[in-house]
Amino acid sequence: MAQITLSNLAHTYVPGGAHESDFALKTLNHVWEEGGAYALLGPSGCGKTTLLNIISGLIMPSHGRVLFDGVDVTALPAEKRDIAQVFQFPVVYDTMTVRENLAFPLKNRGLAMPDIQARVALIAEMIGLESVLDQRARGLTADAKQKISLARGMVRESVNAILFDEPLTVIDPQLKWELRTQLKSLHREFGHTMIYVTHDQVEALTFADTVVMMHEGRVLQMGTPESLFETPAHTFVGHFIGSPGMNFFDAQIEGCDAMIYGQRIPLGRRYKSLSGRTQVGIRPEYIQFTKEGGLPAVIKHIEDVGRRRIVHAEVAESLVKVSLPDGYSFDTTMDRIRFNPDKINIFVDGWRTEGEAL
Image 1 (cartoon, rainbow, N blue to C red):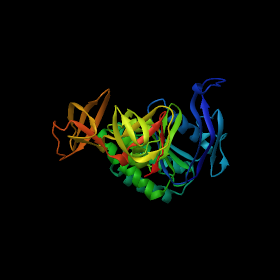
Image 2 (image 1 turned 120 degrees about the horizontal axis):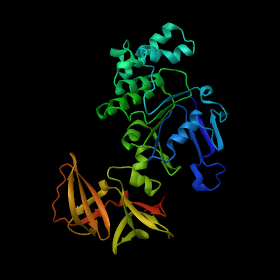
Image 3 (image 1 turned 45 degrees about the vertical axis):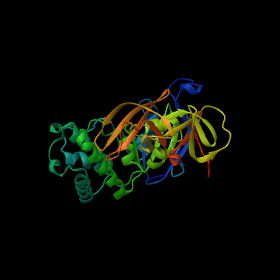
Image 4 (image 1 turned 90 degrees about the vertical axis):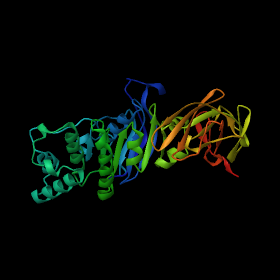
């Protein structure tokens, strides 16, 4: 395991690229602690895989350095970094049995056969491959083959990090939850540094202790799943995280109040004079319908999504989504919405600003 330091790291695929728009990965400085479970989260093309491949050594960065435990490995090739990597599509040896596939990286490192057998048996049990250990990989399903890739990535005890590049893409949806749970258990059991790339917020938030939210080649926020949900650093984070995402309203901030469409909305904190585009952000979970006070809302339609209902409403020029828990007493005569003041976030030109406690 290793502490991974990214120092002034940036990358462009454009020869001689000098403008910020040329860079697939904008300059970043981060330290990822030894034994942490991290997720790189963001939409396609945001730089997640580029960053992962720089860490693994498959890409040499245009600028900056990568350090493992303080040692500069920027120029080291992938095979010298002691990294295990699991890719989006299964990489297995079809002519080998499952057992031989799992044992292969251990044999290459000269481990004694009893140690190999014990390690293979342990990982196979945790991933759920015991029943097919002696079958050839060729005849197995895509799900089973990806399980082999996951298990082979985990089978080595001594690695600096294990990197996962959207490893559950080809997995049947019914198995995804099971495998996410197994990976989390394996992390707790063995304490490897793990970095998991995904565009799926559910995968990221259930697997990782720390989520690295990326957009257009830039790290917008790095924090716990709770912090990204409750206090997103940028409006994009608020929009991307959550189902549905955060609601935003242009607003004028006056101390501990916000003016939205001429209505005064109380805030849970006090703000000094703000310049730039100011917005109020509020999660659908923290909005309530009422018959008086708040903002007038016109209900457009209601979605029943099992244990909750999503109400789509219109407030002046803004579309609003409100999440109502199962059993919430609601009727269409409740035509105004009220925000929980303590759950309101304020953004200036897209970035969250912190107010003072009242």
